[in-house]
Length: 180
Image (tube, rainbow, N blue to C red; front, top):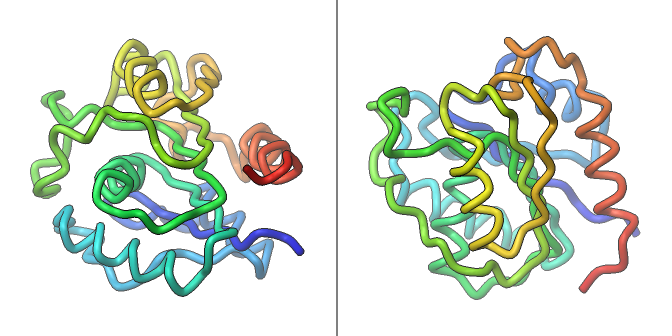
């Protein structure tokens, strides 16, 4: 059985040209998390939304997060004991950077301790929302494998990645590994 995949977009909810949307449109096994305010995100509400979605999806779910969705996972992982198969965290934003969205409330100081599930952090060398060393610190603290894909901006629609074949390959390799 294929693991269910739950997409966690960032602020603005990944538009029509974003790789998350393209993946969701191409695969019925990929679902987007719902019940979140995409324009005025509040961390505790997003964490509650994630807990409900994970409970519905079951312990074999794989989370695929972009940007603020990565911080959502970090805060959720610190508060929850609900098991998941793992997570792919793409373009983790640094909440202490001036570029961090002012509308996002409560996402600062994500717990920097090991997740209870396997994970991959994907970083870009020219992400306007995080320095590479921030991504490295997060990956190390969370026990994640770090994949640096070079200069790809915020790894979003503006990066011109289309349906991001390299990201799909990372997800497929993750899904083909034995569940821990």
